[in-house]
Length: 347
Ligand SMILES: [Zn+2]
Image (cartoon, rainbow, N blue to C red; front, side):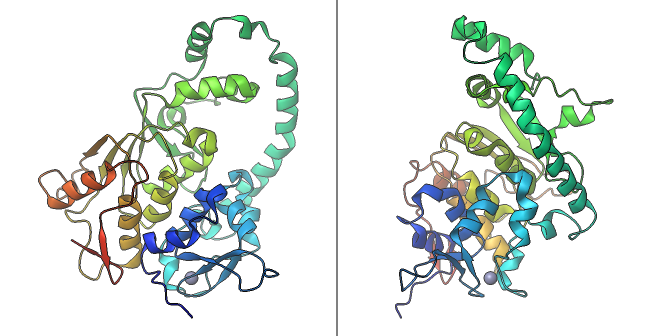
């Protein structure tokens, strides 16, 4: 059998190239958690990916549903399969929506979430139907000039600050809201954000307002991941500026998904360690760095502080900061300049 090195993220991602182009977000996340494309020797065998460490095979459709599908049904998506065998070394790279990672096991918060998503599935079709009836393409709203419509949206939509912090609804939740929304007392006013649900035309126009010239800020990679999944492909296509505190086990899969955002231009990185990689760094850290350095086409890369507990954060005078900026600002989608030796960054 031909030997292909799959010890680094770029190597693993390369195995998917040309085969999963319509499911790129899934392929990138799979590579981030240690999977490689498994080309079946016989056409009869189902297509999928296999862990490069524990050899666990997962069918393509299942991966796509769990890693790209509607986050409301993620519980069901993960119930029927696992990406790794128990004790696989790659389990240290965490998948934020996996029940074991998001909640304290299958009980407790998970059940609440499951009930909530069932309930929402029940009521959402009704909402969609009523709104289509009232605000269709025939609505007089669409006879207004676009500029005026955009002005109306910006008045109705929740007024977001230039920098908007995103937080989970509660500690164990997979749902995210703006911090201002979370801190509001009393029942949440959903009428405003429901504008996005009224109809597709309004939805698309209003989305632009939500993502253009606005920086979204995240206290960790996991929250960024939940946000990227919650805004869906339409939102990821528009996202332009983020500010994220990195350095966790969710970095790899989060940056892998972030790399599918075509308009990402500006990023503030908060890394609470002075160097990217240390000798004998764990796999999750190496893969997190590899997925971060795979981002490309950015115009503005900054390094932010990490609070008083971490005075030695990665910042500009340091070589690694220059290396990150050099890599991330290379032309969009062009191959990286990083050399990897035996799975480690050769600096
Ligand atoms: Zn594995």
